[in-house]
Length: 142
Image 1 (cartoon, rainbow, N blue to C red):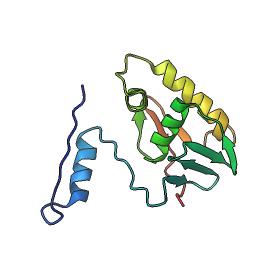
Image 2: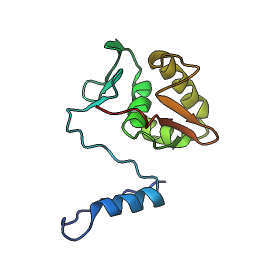
Image 3: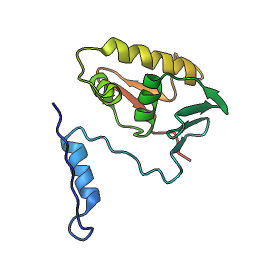
């Protein structure tokens, strides 16, 4: 079972960026972005709105299930961070992972069919063989 750490620091006492780097290196830390842009993740051709839970590809709204949206949002808000199937399952389902990798792989396939120009050659959701998936960190966030 995972543990939760809540810490409150005076800005002068600790460099928060050093703490975040330490935690990322030594645990499975998932950090929520500070959405100064009203909850939008804008990668040009794909825009993800966390408040309305909508995704637009090329300006067209794409229908996603709750789990599909959860996976896409998790990956897109952490570009370049590799998530195992178990991590994705734990984060999106909020439940323990009991070898449900088929669920995650199936949903990734469905998301790719909906958002990728060519699902066989994905641009957004990349596979990291033997580990899991990541959102392409070479895409520039607007």
